[in-house]
Length: 438
Ligand code: SF4
Image (cartoon, rainbow, N blue to C red; front, side):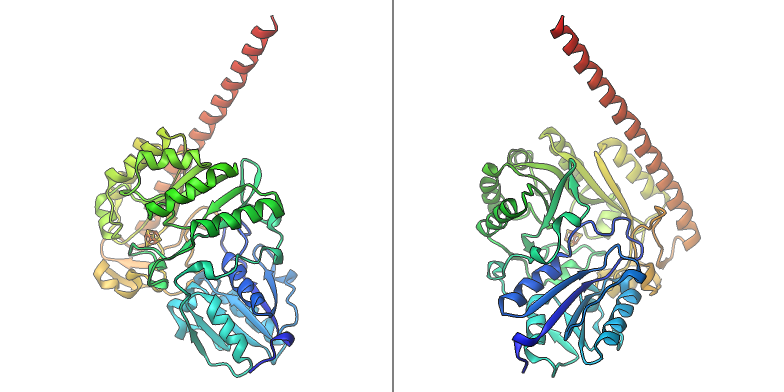
């Protein structure tokens, strides 16, 4: 049993080797773990190495180190663990995050302890039992998330992160954990067996705190399920209205209505995003998206009608994808014309249904060089980590090149169009001004 007053805990967020937007958001998961430890009297530091070159890493002396591992950071996180041990050979080094949760047995011996699941309760147990720790820790969060303190923003500089809305600093919030859906390419639902929520009042309290302490009025709600629980959504939107905030949230096709989007807009929502994934019903069904192409078209149309900026996420290369299904996605994009879109390559992350049951999806082989488990790299291309019946890796790369070439051209067309529209607006404004002056 440890004396908590003497323990120093450093929580380290690794740099992402391929991320195109490293240091976009503060490491929210670590900030939650930190505040929960601080509540119990532990001394905690956050060391966010995202965007930091290895030669510039500065790791402090601590008794317990906690390091996040994502699939593509496996090697980098391992290096961090070794560095922690070099600094304090008697320390306990903990691995946590989505990757150790999915494949705890594959975590290297540079880590003394592996956390399975969300870290708040686990890190508390590890600190309490230090230095007599076990190899594996697993403990679920309380169902009522209001029991946990707000993230420890005071341990980072919120203004050092890149996420901005209309040039203003934004901050990312999480109002729930888990997801009621079971998409075959996503491990989120597996990580959180049941949905857990914060109350609207608890979220309001956090927003007001951030407004008062940092003067930040732009918020990015990270929940994939922000609009799923309608009763909670309407209550949140009612509470947000007087705050004069701007925010971005994720919607759900097949559930959301035009009225929902009007209410979101009235409460300050500027951008709504969806995991649209594909314009092919065949691919949506294979992915177990539990929605239709028609539903996807409707949400984009309604959001535009409500005056929201629309952001669609697509995934290409899911097993079963071919030239025809990619063509359907191109047609979908042409028809619906989302304001913003992002295209990821399918990655068979550990813990997903494709990873667990590859045969069900016609996957002959999954490559497990986790460093290549990124959705898109700095050059704008994704990786291919599966071998399937109908398309070999080289053929897929050709299809990807064609698809991304088409998307890039379209985006350039979009930006030229936007630029021209802006110029026209300016000219019109000047014209009006001249008329008034005359
Ligand atoms: S992709 Fe989104 S909707 Fe599907 S399981 Fe994951 S979080 Fe839920």
